[in-house]
Length: 331
Ligand SMILES: Cc1ncc(COP(=O)(O)O)c(C=O)c1O
Image (cartoon, rainbow, N blue to C red; front, side):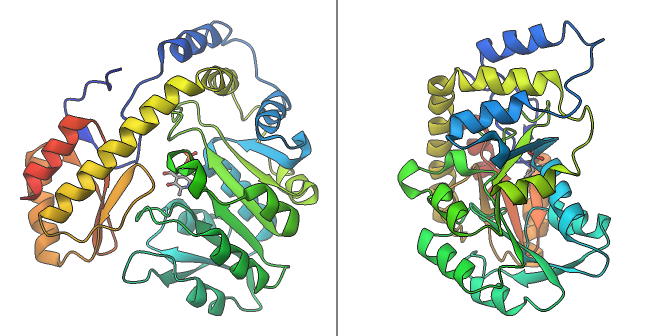
């Protein structure tokens, strides 16, 4: 198991540092043989495959061009011009951008000082024009999670006409014991929709494939926006091959999690404030402007690409050499 070689350390997009497993690579090569053929008009096989894996009916799953594609369908369905979408800030860039695409207003609620989404303030930000609230767990860029109790409490206290998106793009990095019982929550809250991606732990960022799970009526509404021929054969083949290689993928995920711990501890020893991350990135919080400039220069010199978000810097967990490079450049 060796990560893809890198002339520079690409640590800005929360990508998986490992290229496809040999079995996945072979399957993808096979999928590229018939590029003259269109994929399914609207995907049926892939949602059925994912649903079988999750133990839910296929009508509860919608797939799209990455989680980004699915999030766009959700916003297209629920948000009309000037409607509000409540989200934390900073968050995944896609949320404010896609909200703007559909003519909505991003209502941005600052994180708490320890890098958590401020659930009380987010609830207070909901008004009569709010159609969607976005929660991420783990959150991008901080890697913090929302516990089952806090999530249920939040859902209990908001108007059921507001759609709640629970973004679990990084859920495969979270220890099973620490994950919320998504299936139970989806049964109790028909206004909840959970989004996930194969771009991160599964390392399938190129074929662009993500999905959402929700109650049948919720998914039927979201599916109205699916792009004909939008989900490609390599996406379907890649997911199938990854599902057949879960054990090998788990070894890689565990290696990334260990490296995340080493990076976090190393940065803390250097005096940075770093929330404990359950994802494949860490966040240096509340860096002053001078410190950000110093790090930006040091990272560029060391060939490190990281992402500046708000008053902090998000650094993707790469291979061991990337961790060493980040720690050396941060001194
Ligand atoms: C929180 C979150 N949600 C969704 C996505 C979109 O992932 P993709 O479109 O690659 O599936 C990302 C990508 O970085 C993300 O960080």
